[in-house]
Image 1 (tube, rainbow, N blue to C red):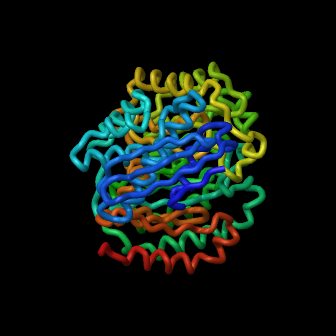
Image 2 (image 1 turned 135 degrees about the vertical axis):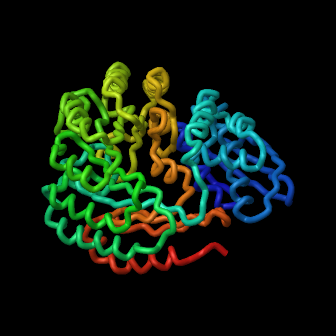
Image 3 (image 1 turned 90 degrees about the vertical axis):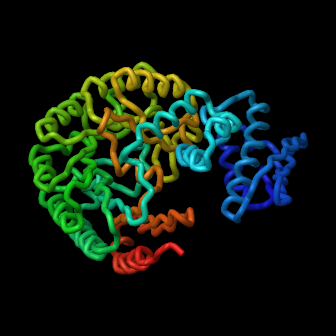
Amino acid sequence: MLKAQPAFLEQELNEVVRLFPGAEDLEIELLQDFDGAVFRGVLRLNGEETHYSHEGAAENEIVFKSLARRYSKLALYNALSAHFSRHLPWGALTGIRPTRLARGELEKGRGFVPLFREMDVGEDNIGLVSRVIKAQEGLYERKEGNCDLYVSLPFCPTRCVYCSFVTAPIDRTRQYIPAYLDCLKRELEGAEGLWENLRSVYIGGGTPFALDTEDLRAVLEAVEPLRTNGCEYTVEAGRPDVFTEEKLALLKEYGVTRICINAQSFSDRTLEAIGRKHTAKEVGEAFELARPFGFVTNCDLIAGLTGESLEEFRGSIDSAVALSPDNITVHTLCLKKGARLKEEVERLKEGDMGEMIAYAREKLTAAGYEPYYLYRQKYMAGAHENTGWTKPGRASVYNIDVMEETADNFAVGANAVTKKVFLKEGRIERIGSPKDIPTYLEKTEKLIEEKKKLFARREG
C-alpha cells in the first residue's frame, strides 16, 4: 500500500514500486513539501523513516512537478534498493526517454552524467546514452513546423501472444478493409497544408504486407500527394510469410526507401511458441528477396520471448548480424494489458535478461553498429530498454523524431496517436484515434476536424 502527498506523486511512485517484486506488499508513505528553494520529504517504509532534501529552482509548475517527482522517486528507489539489496540497470529512472532527460541537462550547460549517477543509473547505460546522442548528430533537429506522417494498418496474419495492439488475424478483419482504406484516404486528404516540412513517412501496423497488393497500392496512392520528394519513406513490411516480390516492387514504384523485416527470433521453437507461422529460414529468404530492390532494411528482435534461452537469443543476434541489415532493433519483452501472454505470466522474471542485453551490445558494436535511439516501457523484463542500432549513415529520421519528441506527428488510422509539439512551451498535445476498427470508422470525420484545429494552433 502506497500513500503520497502531494497526491500527484502517487502514480510515478507506483512505477518505482513495480520495479521491485514484493514491494507492493510493503506499507509506504511519502510526504513532501517545497519552500521555494528546497524540496524536503520524509519516507516511511514499514514504519521506518528516511528524510531527504534537495535544492531546486522551480520557476513554473511544470518544472516544480518534474523535480518533485524526481526527488520523491529517488528517495523511494534508494529505500527499496536497500530493502531488497538490488540495483536496477536504469536506477530510479522510470521515464521512457532517458535521452530527453540527458539532453535537458546538456541544454542547461551542464553534463548529464552527475544526475544519472545520482539516480543510480549503471555506468554501461550512461555510456549507452552518450553513444545515442552522438549517433543522432546531423539528424536530431528541434524546429517549429517539422512533422512526420504515420499511417496505421492494424492487420496481421496472426496475433502474437505478446502483442497488446488491437489487431486480429486478417481473416477476421478483412471485411473492414474497403471502408478502412476509404477513411484513411479521407484523413490524408484532410491533412493537406497542415505542416511546413515533412521529415518522414512511416506506414506501420500490424503488418502492412498482410494486405493484398492492390489494397496496399491504394494506401501508397493516398499518401502520394503529401509525400515530399527526398523524404524518408518507411513501410513496416513485417513477417516473411506475407512477403512477395510483387509487393516489394510496388514499394519501389512509390518511392519507399526503408522496410522493416520483423524476425523477432531466429529460433523455430520460439517462433512457434509466440504464434508465428513462418520459420527462421524464411526470414533469411525475405532478406534475400528484398536485397535487389536496394531498400534500407531493419530487423527486429525481442529479448525475453516465451521460454527462449540465453543461447537461443545469442543465436538470433548472430543470425541477424550475418544477414547484415542496415538497422537492428533489440527490444526487451514488455507485457502490456491486452497481450495474451500477460494473462499467462503475472510478472516477468529477469532470468538471463542482463546477459542477453550485454551480448547484443557487444556483438552489434563489434559488427560496426551504433545505438541511435532508445526508449523504455512499463513492465519490461529486467527493467531494461529497447534500442535501435544502425550502420553509419543509415539511422532513421522517423525513429529519432518520435523517440525524442522533437517534431509533430500526424497519425492516421485506428490506434494512431497524433502529436502536436509546442517546443517553446515544452509541452505536447495528443489526439488518440479509437483502437478498434469499427469505432474508428464511425469517428473518422470528427478526428479530421479535431486534427485540423490542433494543427492550426500556434505557440503562444
